[in-house]
Length: 278
Image (cartoon, rainbow, N blue to C red; front, side, top):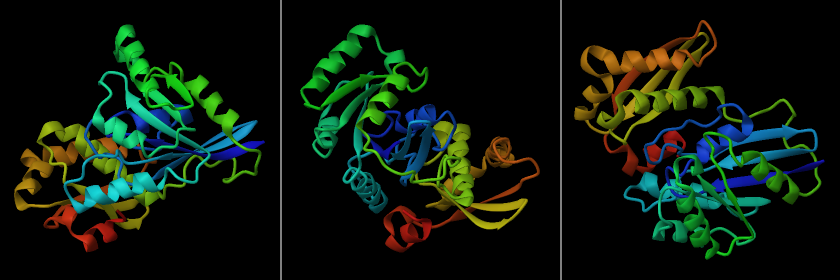
């Protein structure tokens, strides 16, 4: 039996969360095309007859503009050390830039480099990206598509081959260690990003403040009064549609209440970030 930890790191929007969900065959990490969708370490557990792999999804490493951004980077970088398989994920559709190289310097060269989104990149572009990535001098390279699944089984086999023999870190029926309340708050944030699209400010946070099943109360935090109306939408349309989409992913009978609250400049205040768990 092989067991161990594998970390997914990279810049924002390279598809780390989509890849984790594809590997596990179920959704454990929310996804969006907005930067900094993932804000904490999300653990997903892959159980096979021959191995258990604990994957760690991390926030995208970026140039921070707020205290929240600094903490997200710290969270991501802290996950790189002391794991069995560190993986740098890059985007096949975007040229290898200074940001990718900056992140690459923080990942051990014994790690893997994963080129994602090959399903939407021309073959010649993928080859060029792999050639450019070879300059980073990683030990293995995997072109994959987290959306179609192409190359993902080979990537997982490569990860398992690197793991040491060891015990199960989680019971074999566990897929994630994310608490239910945190997961519901994340679903609300994910669906807000999907429903409101470009109108939604990036500076929103969500937290479950009451849980008395089947009643769940979730607060949506914004930084300014002007953002509150955007999140609610005309006649409450945004909030209503968000609630419908989240309830579709919850057990039958769940009663979800959504409230919008202004917490001025929460991204820049240490106490507010501590309270939200960032």
